Length: 283
Image (cartoon, rainbow, N blue to C red):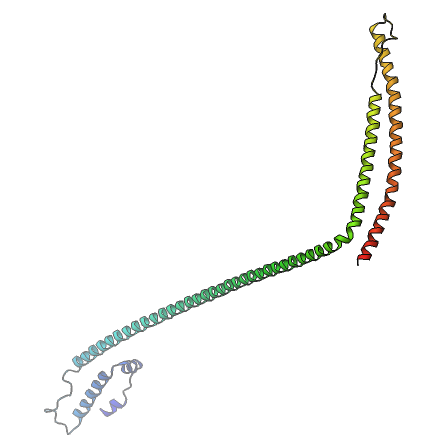
């Protein structure tokens, strides 16, 4: 029996199945082999010997069933844990996405608030500039009003001073002014006389130009066309004579008028010199 056991060898499949067998199954098989070895001993009574496992096959089946049940439970637990882990991972991702979304929204809100603050600051700055421009414009207007008042006061003072000076010089200048007035009156009288002269010349020319039609030399038997022709010739001769007389009268008046005007500038210069001398004497 020892020779037979020593020459026995296990196949590869046996090792694979043995290593894959559950621990309780391998322990029961080892215990069964141990019992057989003990039974084969010469000092072991055969009649009273009892195996540790009454029915090895049934016991192994129970062990396999228990192992499969344990495996199923372990698998279920593992699946549940995997599901829980997957759910937790999904929840984690969703939470991260939610937080990221909230972060982006907060950044957008901050950007909007920053933009609104910048726009508000810009608006306030523009309002300040407008207010400053309004204040500056009002100050310029007030300064302009003050300047205008000062100028008006200065002009009023100048006018008062000039008026006082004119009043003080009035007495001194009265004689010179009176002389100027007399000269002006004389000049106007001369012009009036000249106007009367030219009027007289023109009136005389018009009066002399009156046509006196006389038909005493006209033949009584003359026809109407001959009468008209004779009257026209008479009118032409008369008008030619009168126009020559008017022309001579106007030329004479023009020569006299020019001679008078040419002598007036010298008289005006003399009067100006007298005025300047009077002013120097005053000062």
